[in-house]
Image (cartoon, rainbow, N blue to C red; front, side, top):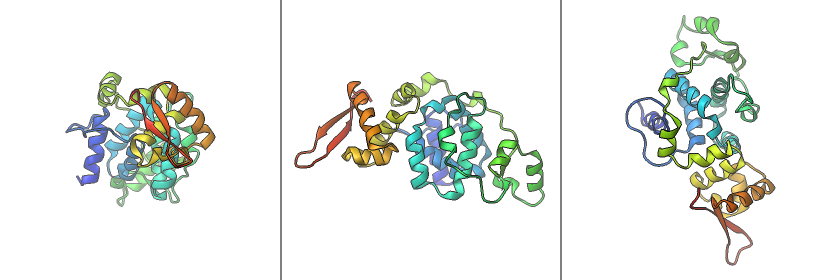
Amino acid sequence: MNERLDNLIRDWTSIGAGFGGEPSDGEVDLERLLLETARHASGMARLFIVAATWLHRYGDLVAKHRLKRLIRDELGAEYRPILGLLLDTAQEGTHPREFATVTRLLRPAQRAGPLFEVERRAGLAARAERRATALSRRWKLWCEPIEFKDDAVRPTAWMMARHPGFIARADFRGDLRASILAALRHDPGAGASEVRLAELCGGSRAQVRSALRNLEMTGRVSGRKVQGANRREVLLGKAA
């Protein structure tokens, strides 16, 4: 297992996905974890299935505005269909569709073929096409029906105890406030100004300003005027 894939699995383990082995230390950047999963999922079917299971259960925790911004800025075009299929698979049977605003921005693969590398060998691609679900055909990434592995995902209490920052994500159900907190935690310089924060969290400046008022009232962020500059710095509060 290469180092990047090993770190990816350790992060998933840290937030409750059952891969065995040691979890990573510290906070997990959930949105970037999804991007890295899209980069590696075709080489590891279990990664795709367990990630879809986790997202099916805990999709509310994903900061949707920030995820869209990261897709635009950091995810190569060749991996976007894989992420689209992953998110669409995870939201099957959910109402409303948890990731609809994200998947609308993604496009199917340019050429149809098997999702998993192991099925791209001669003789296996035709079988993958025959067994492909209608959903995977829409993304032009053929795969068989995915069965969620509920016993491979830890309960909510375990995850929240390990990652208390996820509690606010659950409270906000992935709305812009969750993206603001995630940007402040994981994107260097995000709190330098409201303008910079808006760029990194994926919202407009007016939307961010409105969300910040709520976050300040609840002690999750604080703001202060930068001396000698016409801008306001934003900091994580103790309640975040």
